[in-house]
Image 1 (cartoon, helix red, strand yellow):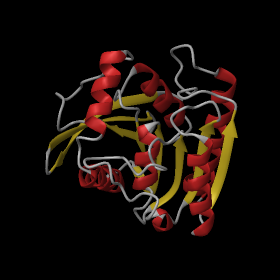
Image 2: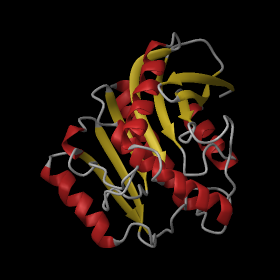
Image 3: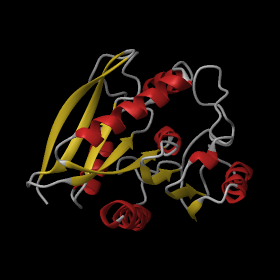
Image 4: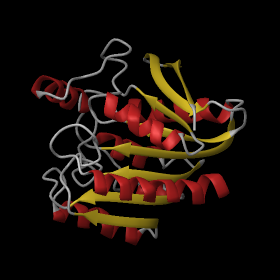
Length: 247
Protein backbone atom coordinates (compact mmCIF):
# COMPACT_ATOMS: atom_id res chain seq x y z
CA UNK A 1 0.00 0.00 0.00
CA UNK A 2 1.23 3.49 -0.86
CA UNK A 3 1.67 5.65 2.24
CA UNK A 4 1.81 9.32 3.04
CA UNK A 5 3.88 10.82 5.83
CA UNK A 6 3.22 14.03 7.72
CA UNK A 7 4.32 15.81 10.87
CA UNK A 8 1.93 17.38 13.36
CA UNK A 9 3.08 19.54 16.26
CA UNK A 10 0.54 18.82 19.00
CA UNK A 11 0.35 21.45 21.70
CA UNK A 12 0.90 20.24 25.27
CA UNK A 13 1.33 22.02 28.58
CA UNK A 14 5.10 21.69 28.13
CA UNK A 15 5.24 22.91 24.53
CA UNK A 16 4.80 21.50 21.05
CA UNK A 17 5.18 17.73 20.63
CA UNK A 18 6.36 16.71 17.16
CA UNK A 19 4.33 13.69 16.11
CA UNK A 20 5.27 11.62 13.07
CA UNK A 21 2.29 10.21 11.20
CA UNK A 22 2.11 7.54 8.50
CA UNK A 23 -1.17 6.58 6.86
CA UNK A 24 -2.50 4.98 3.69
CA UNK A 25 -2.42 7.43 0.77
CA UNK A 26 -5.90 6.48 -0.41
CA UNK A 27 -9.15 8.07 0.71
CA UNK A 28 -10.91 6.53 3.66
CA UNK A 29 -11.16 6.39 7.43
CA UNK A 30 -8.79 4.09 9.29
CA UNK A 31 -8.11 2.91 12.86
CA UNK A 32 -5.46 4.92 14.71
CA UNK A 33 -2.43 3.58 16.54
CA UNK A 34 -0.38 5.57 19.04
CA UNK A 35 3.13 4.27 18.40
CA UNK A 36 5.99 4.70 20.88
CA UNK A 37 9.65 4.53 19.95
CA UNK A 38 12.71 3.45 21.88
CA UNK A 39 14.64 6.02 23.94
CA UNK A 40 16.31 7.20 20.71
CA UNK A 41 13.08 8.73 19.35
CA UNK A 42 12.05 8.38 15.69
CA UNK A 43 15.01 6.61 14.11
CA UNK A 44 15.10 5.00 10.66
CA UNK A 45 14.26 1.52 12.02
CA UNK A 46 11.29 2.99 13.92
CA UNK A 47 10.04 4.71 10.76
CA UNK A 48 10.29 1.44 8.83
CA UNK A 49 8.32 -0.38 11.52
CA UNK A 50 5.69 2.37 11.47
CA UNK A 51 5.43 1.96 7.71
CA UNK A 52 4.90 -1.79 8.05
CA UNK A 53 1.94 -1.27 10.38
CA UNK A 54 0.45 1.65 8.44
CA UNK A 55 0.60 -0.28 5.16
CA UNK A 56 -2.07 -2.66 6.49
CA UNK A 57 -4.60 0.15 6.79
CA UNK A 58 -3.80 2.11 9.95
CA UNK A 59 -2.93 5.68 10.87
CA UNK A 60 0.25 5.37 12.92
CA UNK A 61 1.18 8.37 15.08
CA UNK A 62 4.57 8.43 16.85
CA UNK A 63 5.28 11.32 19.24
CA UNK A 64 8.79 12.44 20.13
CA UNK A 65 8.79 11.35 23.76
CA UNK A 66 11.43 13.87 24.87
CA UNK A 67 9.95 16.91 23.13
CA UNK A 68 10.32 19.05 26.27
CA UNK A 69 14.06 18.50 26.46
CA UNK A 70 15.33 18.21 22.88
CA UNK A 71 14.70 20.36 19.77
CA UNK A 72 11.82 19.07 17.65
CA UNK A 73 13.05 16.50 15.18
CA UNK A 74 15.92 15.28 17.36
CA UNK A 75 17.01 11.69 16.80
CA UNK A 76 19.49 10.22 19.27
CA UNK A 77 22.20 7.97 17.92
CA UNK A 78 22.45 4.22 18.42
CA UNK A 79 25.69 4.76 20.35
CA UNK A 80 26.82 5.27 23.92
CA UNK A 81 26.13 9.00 23.87
CA UNK A 82 22.61 8.47 22.52
CA UNK A 83 21.93 5.71 25.02
CA UNK A 84 23.19 7.81 27.92
CA UNK A 85 21.05 10.79 26.92
CA UNK A 86 17.93 8.71 26.35
CA UNK A 87 18.28 6.94 29.68
CA UNK A 88 18.91 10.24 31.44
CA UNK A 89 15.73 11.76 30.05
CA UNK A 90 13.73 8.62 30.79
CA UNK A 91 13.89 9.40 34.50
CA UNK A 92 14.00 13.19 34.16
CA UNK A 93 10.55 13.53 32.59
CA UNK A 94 7.66 13.39 35.11
CA UNK A 95 5.32 10.43 34.80
CA UNK A 96 2.39 12.83 34.46
CA UNK A 97 4.05 14.27 31.37
CA UNK A 98 4.16 10.87 29.67
CA UNK A 99 0.49 10.29 30.50
CA UNK A 100 -0.57 13.73 29.30
CA UNK A 101 1.29 13.21 26.02
CA UNK A 102 -0.54 9.91 25.48
CA UNK A 103 -3.92 11.56 25.97
CA UNK A 104 -2.97 14.36 23.59
CA UNK A 105 -2.06 11.98 20.76
CA UNK A 106 -5.13 9.79 21.33
CA UNK A 107 -7.31 12.90 21.24
CA UNK A 108 -5.62 14.05 18.04
CA UNK A 109 -6.25 10.69 16.39
CA UNK A 110 -9.87 10.55 17.55
CA UNK A 111 -10.82 13.84 15.89
CA UNK A 112 -9.00 13.34 12.61
CA UNK A 113 -11.31 13.12 9.62
CA UNK A 114 -9.34 10.15 8.31
CA UNK A 115 -9.65 8.17 11.59
CA UNK A 116 -12.67 5.98 12.29
CA UNK A 117 -12.30 6.30 16.07
CA UNK A 118 -10.89 2.81 16.78
CA UNK A 119 -7.70 3.34 18.76
CA UNK A 120 -4.77 1.16 19.78
CA UNK A 121 -1.24 1.53 21.10
CA UNK A 122 2.10 -0.09 20.28
CA UNK A 123 5.62 0.42 21.56
CA UNK A 124 9.13 -0.98 21.81
CA UNK A 125 11.52 -0.84 24.79
CA UNK A 126 10.54 2.25 26.84
CA UNK A 127 7.82 2.59 24.22
CA UNK A 128 6.44 -0.79 25.28
CA UNK A 129 6.03 0.58 28.80
CA UNK A 130 4.48 3.80 27.47
CA UNK A 131 2.09 1.82 25.26
CA UNK A 132 1.12 -0.21 28.34
CA UNK A 133 0.34 2.98 30.26
CA UNK A 134 -1.46 4.54 27.29
CA UNK A 135 -3.68 1.45 27.18
CA UNK A 136 -5.06 2.52 30.57
CA UNK A 137 -7.08 5.12 28.67
CA UNK A 138 -10.56 3.61 28.24
CA UNK A 139 -10.82 4.28 24.49
CA UNK A 140 -7.85 2.01 23.71
CA UNK A 141 -9.08 -1.32 22.37
CA UNK A 142 -5.77 -3.10 21.83
CA UNK A 143 -2.13 -2.68 22.86
CA UNK A 144 1.10 -4.31 21.70
CA UNK A 145 4.16 -4.02 23.94
CA UNK A 146 7.55 -5.31 22.81
CA UNK A 147 10.08 -5.95 25.62
CA UNK A 148 8.60 -3.20 27.78
CA UNK A 149 11.28 -1.95 30.16
CA UNK A 150 10.94 -0.97 33.81
CA UNK A 151 7.36 -2.10 34.47
CA UNK A 152 8.61 -4.76 36.86
CA UNK A 153 10.85 -2.22 38.65
CA UNK A 154 8.39 0.68 38.71
CA UNK A 155 11.21 2.99 37.68
CA UNK A 156 9.79 5.08 34.82
CA UNK A 157 9.76 8.85 35.13
CA UNK A 158 11.03 11.43 37.58
CA UNK A 159 11.58 9.89 41.01
CA UNK A 160 11.58 6.38 39.46
CA UNK A 161 8.35 5.41 41.22
CA UNK A 162 5.75 4.67 38.56
CA UNK A 163 2.45 2.93 39.31
CA UNK A 164 2.15 0.84 36.14
CA UNK A 165 1.92 -2.49 37.98
CA UNK A 166 -0.62 -1.14 40.43
CA UNK A 167 -2.79 0.23 37.61
CA UNK A 168 -2.62 -2.83 35.37
CA UNK A 169 -6.30 -3.49 36.00
CA UNK A 170 -7.16 -0.19 34.30
CA UNK A 171 -6.31 -1.76 30.94
CA UNK A 172 -9.57 -3.02 29.45
CA UNK A 173 -8.49 -3.65 25.86
CA UNK A 174 -6.65 -6.73 24.62
CA UNK A 175 -2.91 -6.92 25.35
CA UNK A 176 -0.03 -8.53 23.48
CA UNK A 177 3.17 -8.65 25.56
CA UNK A 178 6.32 -9.88 23.79
CA UNK A 179 9.66 -10.60 25.46
CA UNK A 180 13.13 -11.83 24.53
CA UNK A 181 14.34 -14.46 26.99
CA UNK A 182 17.93 -13.30 26.48
CA UNK A 183 17.05 -9.68 27.30
CA UNK A 184 19.13 -8.58 30.32
CA UNK A 185 16.89 -5.58 30.97
CA UNK A 186 13.83 -7.66 31.87
CA UNK A 187 14.88 -10.81 33.78
CA UNK A 188 12.69 -13.86 34.26
CA UNK A 189 11.58 -12.79 37.73
CA UNK A 190 10.56 -9.38 36.36
CA UNK A 191 8.50 -10.93 33.59
CA UNK A 192 6.83 -13.32 36.01
CA UNK A 193 5.97 -10.48 38.38
CA UNK A 194 4.10 -8.72 35.58
CA UNK A 195 2.50 -11.92 34.28
CA UNK A 196 1.17 -12.76 37.74
CA UNK A 197 -0.21 -9.25 38.11
CA UNK A 198 -1.96 -9.36 34.74
CA UNK A 199 -3.47 -12.73 35.61
CA UNK A 200 -4.56 -11.33 38.97
CA UNK A 201 -6.50 -8.49 37.33
CA UNK A 202 -7.98 -10.75 34.63
CA UNK A 203 -6.34 -8.99 31.67
CA UNK A 204 -7.26 -9.95 28.10
CA UNK A 205 -3.76 -11.19 27.57
CA UNK A 206 -1.55 -12.68 24.88
CA UNK A 207 1.93 -13.45 26.28
CA UNK A 208 4.88 -14.51 24.13
CA UNK A 209 8.46 -15.21 25.18
CA UNK A 210 10.96 -15.94 22.42
CA UNK A 211 14.67 -16.71 22.24
CA UNK A 212 15.83 -13.24 21.36
CA UNK A 213 17.88 -10.36 22.71
CA UNK A 214 16.72 -6.90 23.65
CA UNK A 215 15.90 -4.93 20.49
CA UNK A 216 15.53 -8.04 18.32
CA UNK A 217 12.87 -6.11 16.38
CA UNK A 218 15.24 -3.30 15.35
CA UNK A 219 16.37 -3.95 11.77
CA UNK A 220 19.77 -2.37 12.38
CA UNK A 221 22.57 -3.83 14.45
CA UNK A 222 23.74 -7.25 15.57
CA UNK A 223 20.72 -8.11 17.75
CA UNK A 224 18.19 -7.98 14.90
CA UNK A 225 16.38 -11.28 14.31
CA UNK A 226 14.43 -11.03 11.05
CA UNK A 227 12.55 -14.29 11.55
CA UNK A 228 11.35 -13.30 15.02
CA UNK A 229 10.48 -9.83 13.74
CA UNK A 230 8.41 -11.27 10.89
CA UNK A 231 6.51 -13.62 13.17
CA UNK A 232 5.89 -11.20 16.01
CA UNK A 233 4.89 -8.22 13.86
CA UNK A 234 2.41 -10.64 12.34
CA UNK A 235 0.94 -11.29 15.78
CA UNK A 236 0.76 -7.54 16.41
CA UNK A 237 -1.17 -7.07 13.17
CA UNK A 238 -3.46 -9.96 14.07
CA UNK A 239 -4.34 -8.20 17.33
CA UNK A 240 -4.99 -4.86 15.63
CA UNK A 241 -7.07 -6.45 12.88
CA UNK A 242 -9.13 -8.24 15.53
CA UNK A 243 -9.58 -5.40 18.00
CA UNK A 244 -9.50 -2.28 15.81
CA UNK A 245 -10.30 -3.14 12.20
CA UNK A 246 -13.06 -5.61 13.07
CA UNK A 247 -13.68 -4.42 16.62
